[in-house]
Length: 147
Image 1 (cartoon, rainbow, N blue to C red):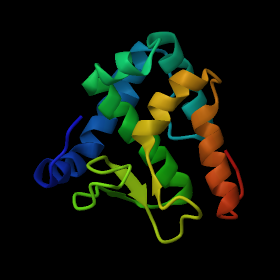
Image 2: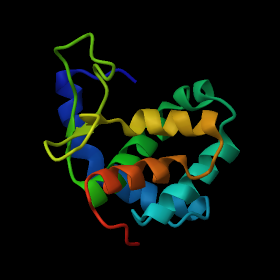
Image 3: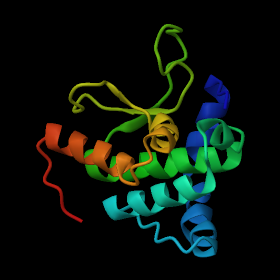
Image 4: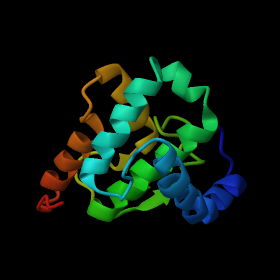
């Protein structure tokens, strides 16, 4: 997925509509409870692992990849805050031209990349990789883990 400064703003604007469709119709069709909980990240990751055998397969499904990125990011935002951001200036940034979350409150890595969490979960094949990343971030920020 390639983003520009202009279409990134449109992307931000469309998040709520996309998530309404994803957490309702898509969730119902796939028997998932997408309620922005930590547990829902494990459910979604299980679906990812059943559906995609490689990162390339997921990347070649841009609509779902986009929806997964947003859902994972919005779930992270619920627990650790942050705002959506895209670096359009620093080509050396590993997350250049990718939607990421950022906040001055984040500890360690300045950017949280839901897009890479989705793809990395396929390689790791754990079923709880994404939720573990979130929990680790919460721990680093001294946020208690409650469902």
